[in-house]
Length: 281
Image (cartoon, rainbow, N blue to C red):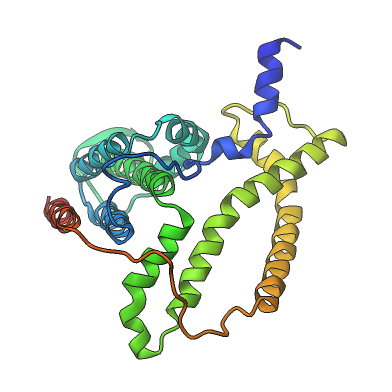
């Protein structure tokens, strides 16, 4: 086998490369210097904009703003591009479903075979699905690169603290979010280890390329052992948290106090205005 073939075969086991987001990058950028609460609210506003946009134009504007955010954050685009290419077969499958099974009639018919009718509105709906899911991947990648786990924890605790007056366990919710974020790379590493073990026992892990059926056949045997390993790890984590007295204190303290600045207020006003514009367009 050639060197290029060996590299392609090895890449089949690198599940971390398929994630649309990488680790936190502690660089000195205007985005990183914002308050964690501001960055979290920016992510929420961008998500709302992607969900509420009704036209592809609004989704294109959202994607442009997100990519500008990547540039401002001074983070490389390679993880985003690599993750998007890995998810592209699934995205194209969703686009095909949207085009073929969209409910509605449109007089502008582009293609028709028997009862199968594809109109310009169907193509625009498929394009909207592709842009919307691509935007979600880009937002998650930007959040992962610009927000550390401690910043997410402190920011969410500060944002949700008013709900504690209603006796809502906000700290438990924040801890659940933190554990979920930490489990993503752990799941990828566990899946990689299981796939390598199965390949060493004769499983077919040749490069699947764009063959979606072959990729499903490769991933399906990994799901059950991955699920069992995840349950085992979650049980061990629960025992460790219980042994260390999690929940014994009503309110946790923090060494670093968060402070809003005028730049944070300006950024939030601009982001909120952009969200309204996207919803109206």
